[in-house]
Structures are given as C-alpha cells and as structure tokens.
Length: 258
Length: 258
DNA sequence: CGAGTATGTCTTGTATATCGGACAACACTC
DNA sequence: GAGTGTTGTCCGATATACAAGACATACTCG
Image (tube, rainbow over all chains, first blue to last red; front, side):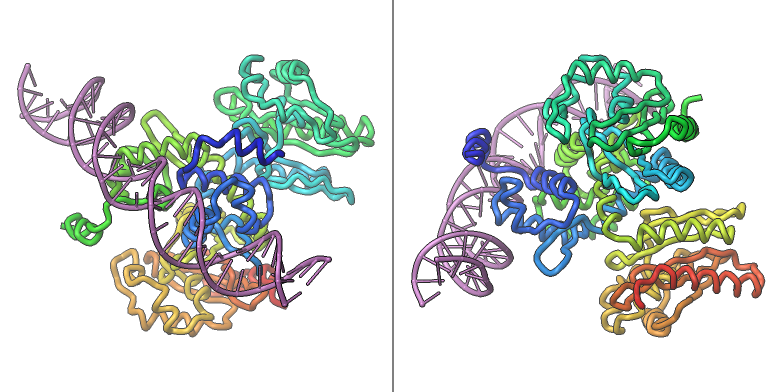
C-alpha cells in the first residue's frame, strides 16, 4: 500500500537526471551510515536498476565511491574525503573546533561533539567518546533533527518564528520515542536561547541523557556551530556547574566575534 | 597552439554527460585549491557556459558546492565535507594517522604529513606545520606526483616494474624545477624501497628540503599510507638519526600487520 | 526437482539534458 | 561614444543518457 501511494505521488516524472540520482544516492549512503549493497539502491531510491548500476560504475571508477567487501557494497570513497578536506581548510571553525572537542573530552571524560547547521538538520562534524562505559553513539557525519537537541535551538536562535517554522520540517518534531513536540514550544525555545552562552535539554533523545551546548559565534555574531557535551542524567549539580563553565569557555574560545 | 592540439584531440565528442562534467569540475576545484570563479570554469573544463552555470546551480542548491565571496566564486560545500567524514569513519588509518601527525609535529617541531596513494598520485590527507619560520606549504587535500617524494616510492614498493610504469604518467616524472627523472631510476628506487621502514629523498621538490618517510602497513602487509617529515637540508646527522627513529616508531605504531 | 526471487549485464528506443547561440548588462580602452 | 571583451540568462534543437525489459546466473524453499 505504501508503495502504491509513492508510485502515485511521483508518477508524472518518468526520467530523471543522472546528477539528481547521484545526489540522492549520496544522501542515502550518508543516512545509512554504512556500506550499502548496490542491489538495495534501486528500490531505496526509486530508480531503475540499469541506471544505478551505470552510475555506481562511473562513480567508483572515479574514486567518489568505493566498492567494499565481498558482496557488492558501496560506500564513500577516498576522493570525496580529499575533496572534503578542501572545505575544512577554508573553515577553521571546523579545524579548531574538532581539536577543542578532543581536548574537552579528554579533560572532562565526557562525550563531546561539534555540530553545525546543515539545511534543516544538525550535522555532527566531529565527536569524541567519553570514558564512561555507556556510550551514546551519534556518529560523525550523521544528521539529526534540530528539535532533538540543545544545539538545534542555539543554531536557530537568531531567526524569527516565521523563519524557524519554514525551516523545520514537521516530521522532525517527532522525538525518537514518538512523542511530538509542538512547533510553538520549539520556536519559543529557540527565541529563548537567543544570546545564551549555554543551553541544556534533557530527555529529548532518550530518557537517560542530557545535552549541554554552547554556541560558537561567527564574525557576523550569529551562531555558526555549537560545541556540546552528552551527559548522563544522574550527575551532581556541582559536576554539572563545573562542566557548564568549561563548555562556555570552549565556546567562547572558538567564537570569532570580538 | 596548445589549444589547437587539444581541440583536435577531443573534437569527435560533442556532448558530455552532466556527471562527467561534475567530476571534472570537482577535480579542477581540488587542483586549484581555492575558490574558483564560475566564469572561469567553462574555459578551464572545455565545457559550454550554459551547462556549467546549470550544473553549478544544482550543486550549490544541494550543498555539494558553495558560492563564496562577492564575485561568483565556488568552492566545495559543507555537504561534501560531511560525506567525506563517512569515509574517514570507516578508515581508521586516517583517523589515527592524523592524530599521530599532530603529535609527531609537536614532538619534533618539524612539518609532518600523512599521505595515501590515490590513483597515480600521492594525496596529502593531513598536515601539521613545524615551528620553523620557513614554511613548506603542501596543503592538505592536494595531490602531487609520486616521483617527487619518498612516500611515493614506498607506496609503490610492492609493485612490479611493469605495474609501476603503467601507473605513473610520464609527465609526473618532471620535477618542479623541470628536471626529468628517468622512469628506470624511479622504478629502481621503488623496488629498492621494498621492505624499508624509512626512506629519504632530498632536493626533489626543491633545493632546500628533504623528505623523510615511513610506511604504514595494512593488514595485507602492503603500504597503505605513509607518515613523513619535511626537513630543511642543513640539519645535523645526529638530529637526523633521532628524527628517523621517531618516525619509524610512528609508522610502526600505525601499521596493522602483526 | 521446478517455481520463485534476487542479482548483475546488455541492448534498444525515446524523453530530455546538453549544447550552441542570441541577448542584455556591464566594464573596460582608445 | 564607439568598439571590444566578459559575465550571466534564456531558449529551441537534437544527440544521447536514461529507462525498460530481455537475458543469464545464482540462490532459496517446498
């Protein structure tokens, strides 16, 4: 039934550009976060098999993708990593921020992350696991809905309610445990976060972690990225206060505004 | 005249796929190592202007490329960086190697680099500048001909002469100062490097630096990457010997073979 | 075994993405 | 102010990249 609906909704367009298929392919690969069988792609992308096999051939030959493992699995290739380095080189928030995440994590023993806004999602650019046995696994390169995190609120803090509502897609308001956050609440959170140097959310992603985030301001005074700590619920108020101060310092250090 | 020759050699093909144009575009952007004006691309890639403008539009809208600055310049975008992270996540030689480069550079005060083989070039995956005033700038993400470096020789060491000759393109045998290295000499160097844990070259890239490289072996026992130091010519033998030992240790630490 | 499903390759027709060129808006120089 | 070159947009024609489907192989399961 689901398939039928899908077919109907996009029945009018029969042919699609190779480039667009490639963009979707890479987005799917990124979402999956693991090597994907080539045979899986036509179904997942709603594309003809012949097209996908041809595109995968071209992309692997060029080094954008790599075939990995025994069965036909593709993942991102060396070339796309090299191209990505070019981006990092021009963006020193990412370079310096990644180093700061490592330092912060070593210093506090907690899981730490560097996040940036990517369209209507929060992208995790770099992460360093803490020394606790429990491991909260949000993997680098992954993207998560903005309403799930403190970082998301900070990164939208400079926007108007109209802009925020336009940006955030309704399905992203559904939390991992299926609770739905009212758009109005989220918008209010964002506006409330304006100017803050620290923001906490608890129990959004799951019931046993809280998220502590500090903004990194760009030269224009807007939040360019965030640095954050992923903490268990049961830390003492003193521990928490200390971590907050440390995190605020990291955020300020990385900021570009004077 | 050069242009005429080029026109003739590829005159038969009139139309080209968008995907191929995109691949060339990204390769050019990577080579340039800086934001490139859109207007420059049609000439540089031998492509029609209308096509390039359309492709750039699609790629920037998707986040693969970004428009930067006042005039119409493009560079790699956030999305390609995020995709690149996926590659790094699956390749811990790169992750651990980058960290080791930083450590090595802080320890020795010298410029250090992590290199991998990419097709018939050596790609610089990560670099950390030394504390010397002179700065040898090979930028991360850049690719240089294999015959120019010690790393290049190590990375081809497992190959047969036939394979090496097939891989290395003749124009790469020309050094930066226009001297041409005979293919036979380079092949001999590679074969000679087989099994070495350290290799040095001097005066290839320029007259005042030498290159010290140590192989990083993969599980298959082949050289998967190299870690290297870029040094001035005028260091003492004692300094050199000490740096060699340190570098060998780094290479061994990063290697996967038992 | 035979029927059914999944995977990868190859070929053929046509919908359309690419191309060429026209056009406008500049920014030069002489 | 005329002449020349550069940059970006738009549009119609057609070469061809994409889609569909046939074919081959390899499985699973009753």
